[in-house]
Image (tube, rainbow, N blue to C red):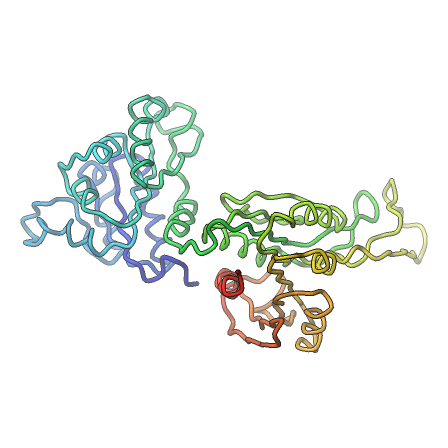
Length: 400
């Protein structure tokens, strides 16, 4: 999967704390995402995890000293790396390094390097709870924020020193997520994006319901991509087991009627509406108050039609760009274009379900984009995150 850090030069700075062991996992995730990662460590960091570990994971020498006698270019290494870097992440960032950088001190390779950096920097504090909450550390973190650095809030819990509270290094996947957001172009800044995702569940009795296999992955990918690109995002989600996207306001719903209410409530302030949820077309006319017992050989269930949310939004929309989805089992072009016209959409994302690499529950998708002006754009199989960004690329082209 190609992300905003794919092919980018990233410098991972590691300071001397017990959380330095997590930096190895962060390095692995950065490398897996396609980043070209270099590691710079303080001498104290090397006391917790040896440089050899990071050299093996990155495939590159680790910088620990400005005056390495075995490396004749060590004295200018920090300038070279600073000029080439597209992004920097300091994880863990100790109280000492936070103070040094906040006040422009440079007495080792990492602190000297940071003063020469002009690219975006993410700082991930990790330390004892009382240290983190102390007025000096908080003042220094505020200085870094005012200087334009991204400061990630540490996690809370039991720390290695035995105290309980904030101070834990954020988990590597979260650091990767926030670094990706930091380096993503902000072409949706100032825009509000409404996304629906996941299935709906229509209850039959307290233990049974009508639903579908939607995992919500596509909609969550769109919401995450829109947040990366600077939008204010509202996600209306049916029941899923997915982790919520960071910095996205999520409205949890279960039934189609609940989803309709949430969408109609949120749509007026939106610039873009992406309806990827697999909404149930029908619900049981009556929901039993208690579990239906298995007494008869046959059971007749009367269904009534739910509100067509997408069609209703299409009729109500004014200036919004409206994107729908069409999951079909046959006649994709005919069905998608009919839906595009009848529901007043600007774009529809169509795919044929049933293929192992496309449709419900998969991490990849093979879709075709159909446009209001009659244009058709078939896409190759790609990760759903890439599909999400491509959809937003086409949305941005159509925004006023």
